[in-house]
Image 1 (tube, chains in turn orange, cyan):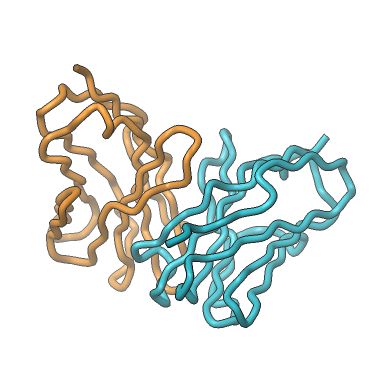
Image 2: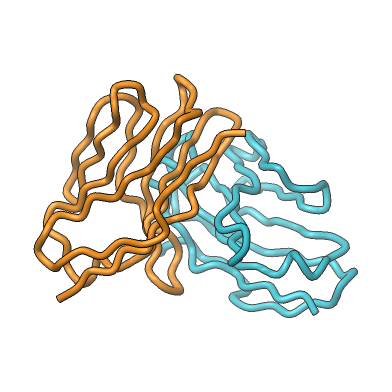
Length: 108
Length: 114
């Protein structure tokens, strides 16, 4: 079965870039990488997704390695409101595999 | 516009009973997907519907079922409830056929089985 692994927790100083890694070494060629975050007691919130190329939007950047076995979500200037659990998700046509999530704590 | 609405928000059921949870997607969204979240197993994909057709199903027993109506509203049903079914059940809607693409989640239904 596909495995998506993430570090359980990370700290980041406010205003600095937060780099959240995800390992998805068993990803298939047609599977996308998605990132969502969940702030306590709320439903997950979409951040970004990609297939092969790096992606950027107003919230974050997604860097996918050339072999696609890992990716990094980058929050360029973390704020206290970015404190949340971040989920890396691999999604194919028939399968959705969630990572265990990284609890990001942004420190003032 | 209104977000994804899940009802009820909280539910307590007894082992052996069955339960139906409801999800109203954002207007115009035709894709609805369901997820289970527990402290032990984390987030797990249940199933996904697009235009009333189940497109994908996660690795859950047949006690878990769902359907989508012509207005895109969806329901999921769990029969013969077990203690381990206690969880937060989340619904998400999307305009895309790929339900994860820019999906919007509801607040969830917290089911407690006693």
